[in-house]
Length: 105
Image (tube, rainbow, N blue to C red):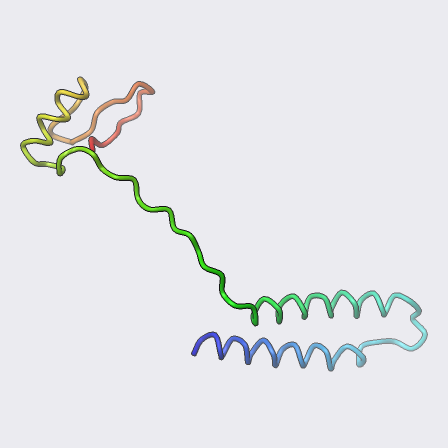
């Protein structure tokens, strides 16, 4: 529904843009008018072409697996306390080698 409406609006705007190009041209302006019309036509074509193109599939990277026990479980407290010496059981964070806090997973 939204794509159909988008295509209709884009088509109508393209038609108005194409029909209004000859109206703004001055008599005897030389090659400058043709360049402006060409650029406008390119822009309208790009918009219409992208609106009518079929959507491409998007690859979504799966989330990284979590190897430790579930957070806040007794096994998690044991795992994090043994693995990270600076583990704080009240917050669930430990201080990494770079000095930044990280949540234990």
